[in-house]
Length: 86
Image 1 (cartoon, rainbow, N blue to C red):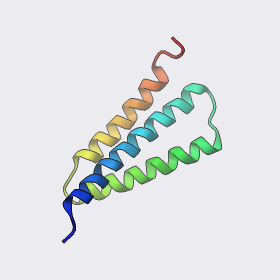
Image 2: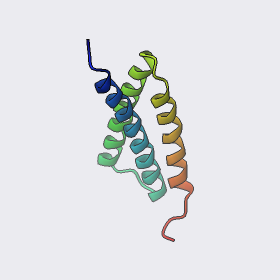
Image 3: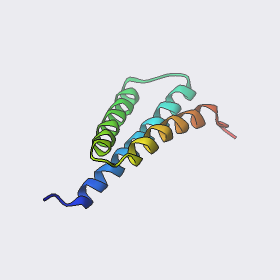
């Protein structure tokens, strides 16, 4: 049988990827321009995080998916509407 600790690490890695994708997207939008390399990195992080978190949700661990999605949205909004340069 698989080691549950390895699955747990993948679950929380998915959460971290989603949070980084949300912060990256907010940084791109607040800067006023989206570059192709940054967009590619954000999409890859978001897709990877969503895949890992969705897999965790299908195995019965819903917390990484819920926290990842709401956290990504919250971080993106905080970066866009936050105080810049002050």
